[in-house]
Length: 466
Image (cartoon, rainbow, N blue to C red):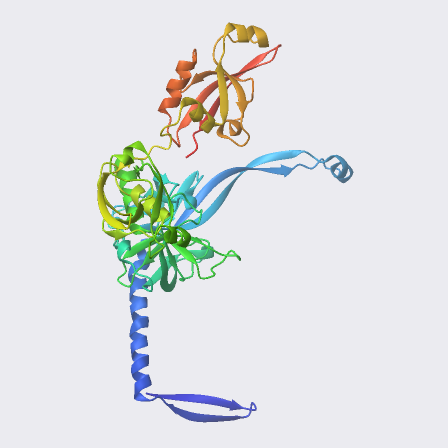
């Protein structure tokens, strides 16, 4: 291979110099060109399946009204007028079925009044929100389309540290941007981004707008959803995080088939095995999950306090967070094999995974604290004592700041007359409704607010925190 290099000397003389590249370097360049062509081929194949997700939200904006007199405007103001404006947010998504199912992040479409999807070829579709799982930051959309360019899903469990990956999305509104890098780590957790974390870490550049986009391997298979970055500047600093596609696929299937996500549960409390604990237990390594507490259900499996969990279904467990996340991904009712070390001996125990219930073991008093309020039954004696006209209902005796009840505008002294269309004539009525509530449910209440001179009824909606 020959290459001509033009050199400008002092702005006057131009010399033409022939540069020769040795055969070994030529072979290396040829290999690098093939490597580059592989990236280009993957990007060309995958790009059509990555979409722009446009969130639209109506908001009320206050605009100061002028009196027409600068003097009065300066000293008294002209008052505020409110008008409705539409805000837009841009993220990314991935087509995962030819009939129009799309995976994206929950934070991309959160609080949207409407969602629009734009394909690589310029076509635009109105999207329906099928369901979300905020605890993993996964959302499922549906558009009415046929023969759409769906990406093939890979197996994220087969990813290895050092594997090449491409990240595709719409950072800062720059449509279909492709970056590449390697898998820097797998199983990243304890980042407090979402409740269930099992992130793939990469140094492929991910920036705002990439969220919900595709992470693919060199075969063009979808292995993750670009989700977050760790950055001090707000832009890419080489630490990008993606939800593994195996997790996202499981969540998507549950949302489509059941309308909700059900997670596995074992009633054990675990902690990371630190070097100090490992030394105290006489273990030559410091990986695994040390059992601190064992509930009645877990006791039936043979698990004991002090056991160190080192494997689950013949796969190594390195931390407490990894164990809990993998149990959560296991369907309730499924059997798992847990490998533990007890008194220096390896044991394998069989367990049936239970269904996760955030209110497990909570009494009604604790359930109502989840709503952020305390109540007592209204009786004729209490009504006479406080001068209320209401003779029945649940009297709110306390409202916790920044709770669901506080956000709904409830106050101490309000009387709950109905909950979810049920009259609140006794504490038993109230407790029956509480017992049916699940995280994420909405509770409709008819509230009576009284003074000694008048009263008003209004409708309040509380959302049970997740």
